[in-house]
Amino acid sequence: MPLDKPLSALYYPLIEREEMTEYEVAKMTENEARTYLEGIRWPEGPVCPHCGATTKDAKIYKLEGKAHRPGLLKCSKCRRQFTVTVGTIMEDSHIPLSKWVLAFHKICSSKKGISALQLQRELGLGSYKSAWFMAHRIRLALEKSPLAEKLSGIIEADETYVGGQPARDSGKRGRGTKKTPVVVAVERNGKAFSKPVDNISSAEIEKKVLSQVDHTSVLMTDEYTTYIPIGRTFGEHHRILHSSGEYSRGFIYTNTAESYFSLLKRGVIGIFHFISRKHMERYCAEFDFRWDHRQALGYNDSQRRDAAVSRIEGKRLMFAQLLRG
Image (cartoon, rainbow, N blue to C red; front, top):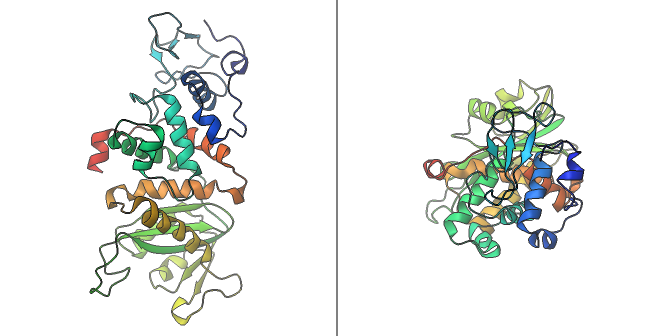
């Protein structure tokens, strides 16, 4: 049938997306989950993922014959068929859509994350591998777009080291260990951007993290010397002297960045236990997303889930690709 009626009237009468709790998400049927995903991905009407045609310049048909699988659409412009999962992280997945939506909700509502083993148990998936792959595809969806708006205002930058505990007799903490260095830039009362880096050098931090910051901003760091040349490229640069026992001097502090790292490390220690270097970037994207959509910025679990699902398009992660890192 051609989609010549308003999409909301024709396609999405079943799901009210406002304040949908985890209990309500868990009760979704497969048809309701598909309707929900279509409403998030195509709020103005279906868009063909093959040729980009919309309901304005082509007729898009819903195929409802007995031989057709549920949710199958066809574009009259390119004559190709598609569903809501084509061109997304869920393409070619055999996991039911209702479980995908529930997985999004659980990952977005768990403050410190949820392990793949827990996800497998709560979703009733057949194997740990399926849950692990699913979780990484969702983390890929949560990554910021390269064209995302840059951080601005008062920016706190800091580094930490993520990994297992150092050997007791080594006496080393942070620098000098084999842990993965992670750098974060955090807006005061705003968003964050974190990423693993190869080393804590000015060039590396500028290239990987601070390139996402507007350099007219005010930069706050600790006294580590690698930030001195970076600070010269900002409107202002203030340093807090942790080595002297100083943690706040008026509006000069890095406590917001340390709060971000406390969540990341609690997730590693209490939930994931170990994160390899080749996957660290996706875990950082997961914690960035929850930070950017936290309750203090006006988001609840339902809104956070909807924001995450809206990012599924144009991203693919194959299992072999995941293993290679």
